[in-house]
Amino acid sequence: DDSFICVSTDVGHYQRFPASSVQMQCPPGTYQNENGQTVCKDCMEGTYNDVYGASSHGLCTQCAKGRYQNTTGNIVCIVCDVGTYQDVEGSTSCLVCPEGRYGSETGLQQCYACAPGTYQQHVGASTCIACDRGMFQDANGQSSCKNCLAGSYANLQGSATCDLCQPGRFGATTALQQCSKCAAGTYQSFVGS
Image 1 (spheres, rainbow, N blue to C red):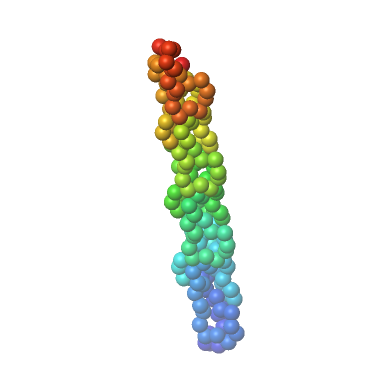
Image 2 (spheres, rainbow, N blue to C red; image 1 turned 180 degrees about the vertical axis):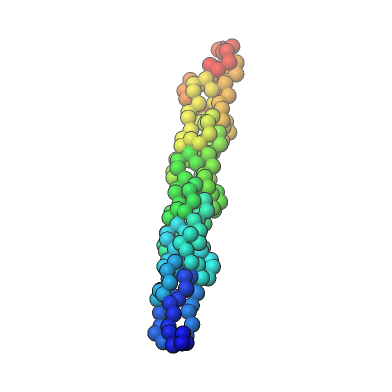
């Protein structure tokens, strides 16, 4: 007669108490791929599951890009913070945005490059910084700005180029915000002097 026999718990289930009459489903964040177990196994770092009764570690889903999980047995993944990103599924951490790039929102799969006229010298930034007057940056994703050369100027913040000094004006030094006027009794007929 089978009514006097204790049976093993099924996969996806466990029972930790003696003399029990029911088996329990493994809770979310765990699984059990063997019969007759007293505990469930945690989903690994970088994964999660949100279902009851998972019967395989394959039901632990890898965290999507832009998310991570650094502990075991979880039901959700954590969204990467501002200034960070993650471009690989199943990750256990997020990466900081490098110099010249920024992350202005959460959950990024990659950081944005600073636009011409801006830069970012720090890692993990959420914005870029406009180049100062007298300086420029003509490329994307840079960590500094360049001085305008002698004979040129930038009178606005965030310049991607420098303007040449016009005839009647000159720029003898670098990083000028404006060109100087020729003194009375003198002249300058070339652009960019």
